Length: 359
Image 1 (spheres, one colour):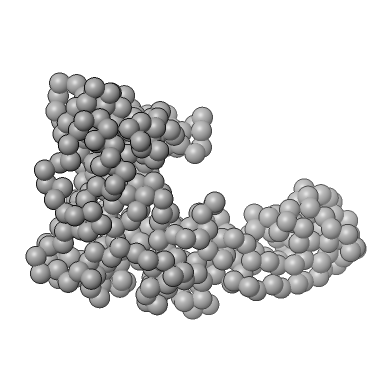
Image 2 (cartoon, one colour):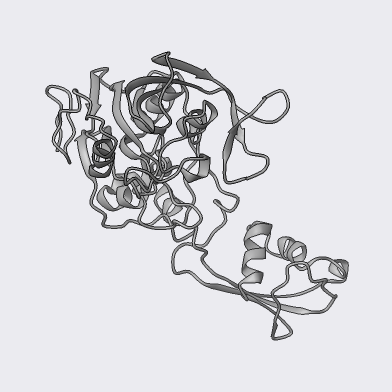
């Protein structure tokens, strides 16, 4: 399978930090349906149905085959069977319809308008709106940034994850960089790992800030043992977790909250949201981590405002700033806070460095 067809079928070609789902390398391309039939041998008598199928169709994973069984894609003796744990008997005739899954149909080009604030042959900087998912996942198999990148640039299909090297949460707005060449992608991945990419956020948090204007949080983050949808501050000696550091700086206080500048030292999942909650300042609108809608904000009040890094090929210093979106600005007004003085770009635009070929 070549790289182009791999992306379409949901198999990102391997690369640094590649995100491989459990079935990422064994799914059918969009629209393909294949039917196979088998007669069970004596040595398979008494096995679970899904285990027997793995032996019969070894190029597909057990989880993928179990999903097909549950979806009604299998018959035994002409009768549908939907329980993967069913015990099989020697001599039974199985008919299996290999169908494309939502994941396998996710990596397709879509005509989605992007706010591309800078672009050259090696990279692009995107201003992502709140509500857009960066990478397809359960519940969001289409309409993502990845789909949009595949739709606007045929070369994206030749790159792991269509050139995506870092992510923003669905309801976080702001800037991120994507690669347009493999050389740039490898260099950007290395730069992010080396903490050579400056990422600055603005956040609206609950509760007035204390006396210290700046606070450095150094607390490992791992999966929340009580809720697998959440991340949490963990003791890495007791449960899996990775080092995480965030700097919070007070910009303005309000009676019920505060406006913060947040600097990422590392890039863990939900890092700012988890650390803000950890220091008892959950983000406005972030119901997953103890926040609540306020000042008109229904999403987490987090905006990736500034992105600065050295160009991975030329070494040129690049520095971009995205203005606050309308809902965030309105929330500041509700709380009597002012837009930061250096948020000077007009809504819907991004400041790019002098001489940068924005388009």
